Length: 412
Ligand SMILES: Cc1cc2nc3c(=O)[nH]c(=O)nc-3n(C[C@H](O)[C@H](O)[C@H](O)COP(=O)(O)OP(=O)(O)OC[C@H]3O[C@@H](n4cnc5c(N)ncnc54)[C@H](O)[C@@H]3O)c2cc1C
Image 1: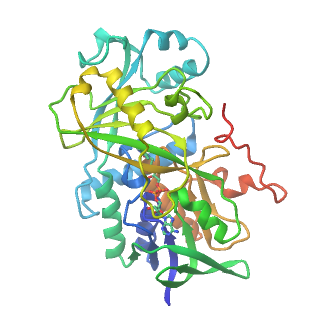
Image 2: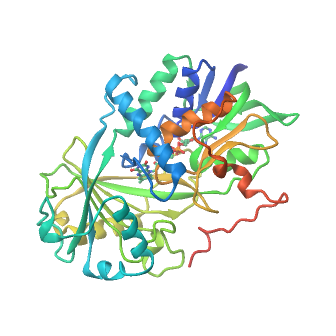
Image 3: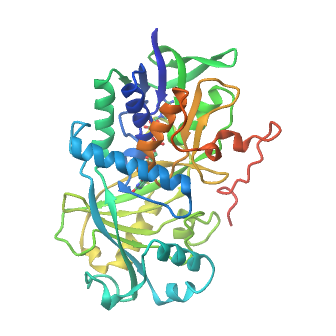
């Protein structure tokens, strides 16, 4: 039997970052991943990194902490590779109808937030970079920028550094059970053997409810599928590296409409067109709707209807894309908290040593580095650098029942 201080379940950004921080603090760590490193959401995202969030102070502080770590890793090379942190330009596209809607309701609030970030609507003929290939229906835009990273190098770099600092990483090893004795975790059972452990970190993403059931708790996380298509290499037909278009119905907090007859609304399809960071391909995305977990393993199958909606949306925005071939497609499972869409982080009351780090569905790469540090502080019984009580699992528990709103199941 293996023996360790901490067993981390999940080789995505949250599990890897936790293992990285704990080993730096001298802890013995075993990370168990049922597939390979970055097999799921952490290996299928756009790698866009947020630096702030004006709507939420905790998120903002976590993003800022993570961004600082990315800068340090980029400069120091500590992760053993170039993580490719770089600033890229974004154009958010709007029609006249959008601008009309920005006088009231949800779109008004969205515009106010952008304005608070210093971002303003600009008429098409005043964009700093002209985009002749974007459909003439787009009459307005907001030009901004974002940081991006190479997600595979970050994940593999964190795994490499954690191993260098003493972690054991068991890939292709599935957690089958978690033993609890006298209210405290003691064992992790895997298909390759058992691990005696003082702490268990549940960073299993969309699968975290299955791990929760192993200790008798119901974690309100659902799998929301995110999908992307990759084009063949092609000369650039855009000036901005990232072009975004949200249709009028789109609400970032409730991004799909369960019973809609419009497939794009039902599948939560909006349009993102990304020029690859270093290659000549375009990446076309995205979707967001609740699906079932894969029956076996971590590999997420793409859905033909979703691929069609994404491709059609991209062509509507940039008609020239019609002449460019798609060479592959991929999808990942975003772990979304069906109650409030917020992360779930912290030790579960009544199960000593069982810690949750899950529910980050849009911004895991921006959250991950700092979140791993917070989890390591919880395990070290230190004062937490950022107060995260409101992300605690106890927010769902009231008089021993679960008053779920089922936000994401019943939207109409
Ligand atoms: C298309 C798409 C685009 C996105 N774009 C961005 C973006 O630009 N920026 C950003 O910040 N975020 C983005 N995200 C969100 C981001 O990918 C997620 O928030 C983040 O990857 C979640 O990380 P995680 O570690 O929680 O989950 P995951 O990466 O899914 O890791 C969980 C791991 O647990 C493993 N596991 C599950 N069960 C078991 C078990 N029983 N035993 C062992 N291992 C197990 C799984 O195999 C998996 O590898 C995007 C997501 C998608 C899908």
